[in-house]
Image 1 (cartoon, one colour):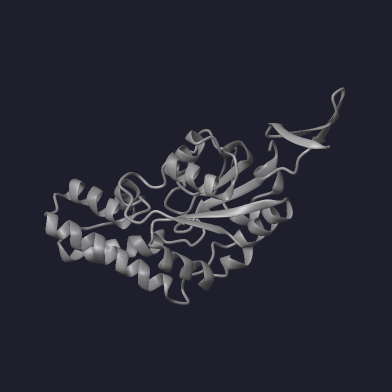
Image 2 (spheres, helix red, strand yellow):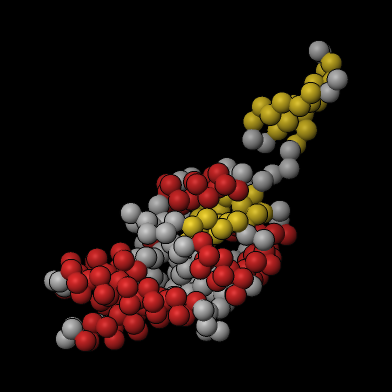
Length: 246
């Protein structure tokens, strides 16, 4: 009787008899993963405009430099906490700031203005054409995140969506990437993360993923050291960048 035993991630050993061993290459289980907010659906320009308006109510001028220093976290509550520390905001003001930024994002996600990052559809098509599953992580509750996935057409790529509402640490962390890959049935060494910030890049590298960096207008200045590739536009991402050594 034929028996199959996985001896390594790349090979299956099929024993035909006690003295005959045939090695067969297994189908590689690749994955392309990314954040739903900021990477798949750009948000930082909206967050900046919202913060500038809200902080002006407190008599605090806020420009692009302030955004670069304090506003690049993925989660509204984290942004509010850093701004509170930087500008000495009272706890009530901090909470209001986080809540109002979150509401502005929710309103945006529910509107026609919420669209995929330019060129991302091409990246997704390339990844799927090379046998990769698509994974998304989000800081939103699952119903809201799933609605956004559908609204912008990401559901056509049949992604696995994993949500981490109200994360208690910098998001995304290495644990978030690893939990997503576990849910997808993929290994870090067979996965590539599309990242637009230093925090996302570093956490994905820590988790053992390949990284392609696609910074936006607010993260162009950041250090993406360790990334396997860096491009300024998603449409410039190639299959070689995604899966060159996978």
